[in-house]
Image (tube, rainbow, N blue to C red; front, side, top):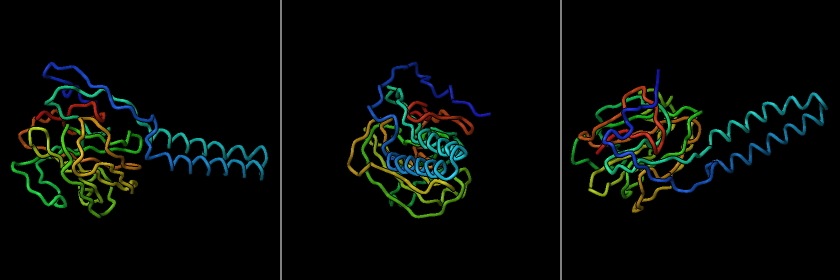
Amino acid sequence: MTTISTAAVAPSGDSRTIPDQPSPIIAREGWVILVIVFLLAGGLTWLSVWQFQALGWIAAVPAALLILFCLWFFRNPQRMIPADPSAMVAPADGVVIAVEPAELPDELATTASEPMQRIVIFLNVFNVHVNRVPFAGTILKVARKAGGFAHAGRPEAQHNQRCTLAMKTKDGRLLAISQVTGLIARRIVCHAQAGEQYEKGQRFGLIRFGSRTDIYLPASALVTVKPGDKTLGGTTIIARL
């Protein structure tokens, strides 16, 4: 049974939080899709009523469900971000499926000065899909890599299409975050650019319709989650540097 990790909630005693940055309740990345869905659903319902009269309203049921699903998928809730300067927060809502030694993705064309580990978070279609930066720092590089579309919960998904950010923390440590597509997800949205400064928990992108997010961090970091734990993006503490 999966549970939201309670061990990740500020064991250092620092329970202060930082207010989230203002943002629309529905992610901007979904606005165009929602407009298209509204138009298609409305058109289908109108045609059904025109053709079948009272029975045509039956078509309104799946149309309404599709609209509700899209609104739910692109929701963009506000979060309270832990102020503890050592805390690294989850970059996404989901379930931790792996904590393991790893090397940085080859598309970054850089080598870490110390051993690294990876935390893998799987997002199903009902999770919030907005991605957040896990730690304050500067974006060094944004690299995209073509690949397959295996189920994001399986090991072979590490070869899927992805977008990876390399970051340097304020104390000079290297981190990386990969947005990885899945079986259904085929569209990665990443707004981050090299040279930009990001605060902990700040939104940087979104993956549409099921995916996973990988976080690469120094092996010396204390990981506070384990496989099976649920995470909330920007809120759950997944590690301490």
